[in-house]
Amino acid sequence: MSQPEDPRAANRAKFELELEFVQSLANPFYLHSLAQQGILNQPVFVNFLKYLLYWKEKDYARFILYPHALHHLELLQQAQFRQEIGKDEWREYLNQKQFDHWRTWREPQKTSNAQNPEPQPTADGDGAPILNPAQ
Image 1 (tube, one colour):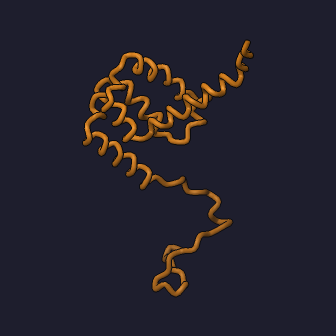
Image 2: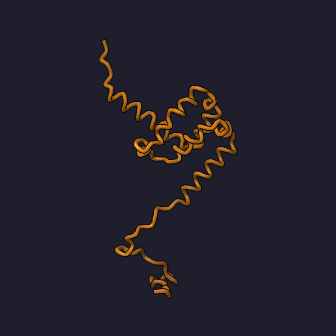
Image 3: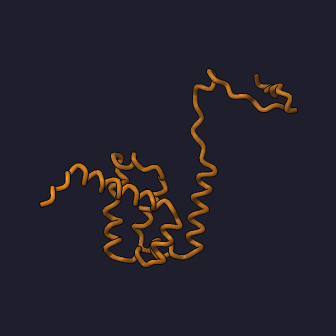
């Protein structure tokens, strides 16, 4: 007779498995592959995608490392997106948009710059700061 599995361990395993899958949705090439295989058109899979929307809730979203995963999960709720992502040009478009976001995203400016001023650019590269006439 086998021992029944620990319910906490089973819940943790399910959580980790679903987290890993949701995060994989951040990859446009993975979405394209799912579409090419016809998986995105299967009613059972569409229902699974609807079920996974709970990851957008605050208590779960905090575990997501790749925020595009949640955006793509939302897009996958639409039949048109599920169909179009199977096209190479859509995959490339989504990949470029994601890259552009990462390339141009910046952290908010810190308000405590007065305590640790960053070095200012120099006019001729000799280390002398460019003077601001407004100072």
